[in-house]
Image (cartoon, rainbow, N blue to C red; front, side):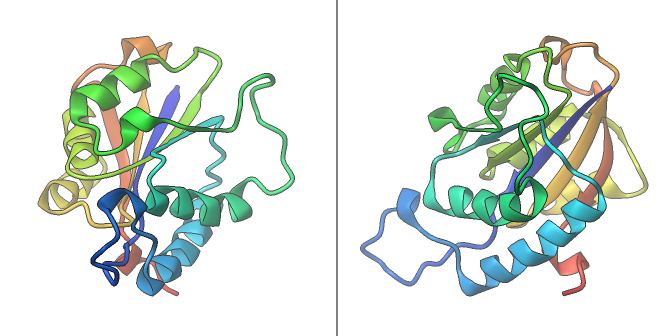
Length: 180
């Protein structure tokens, strides 16, 4: 089974009007959300073989805060593979770009985490979900807020076989659901 986690970056700051979108950092609320997300992800035993992360400041900061808790001191689970790859094409990627990146994931990778942006991430998650646990898909389609984390599973043998409606949305959580 393949497992794909799709994480929208945590809340970013808009304090500096001279800062371009790519350089916006996390807000205090975003940093707080990262703590709750890290706890939740650790409880779910999220151990990605590979993390594909947009190089934008807010996505990098989101992953760096989570990585400390999830992978501290651990070698990559897939020997020879980097644990994190900052992927320029993830910045504001649309659903088709996200699908192409996912399908290009090496076969040895069984658990993939993508840290990116909306609206592409929301569209991608919804497009892959053929079914879901409970009301997860309904909630995801209503709003995929900052810090939203979708967990999809696939019976496909390789990432190249991942197709629209081919996944099961096992969970969808947002920081507001996670107790501090």
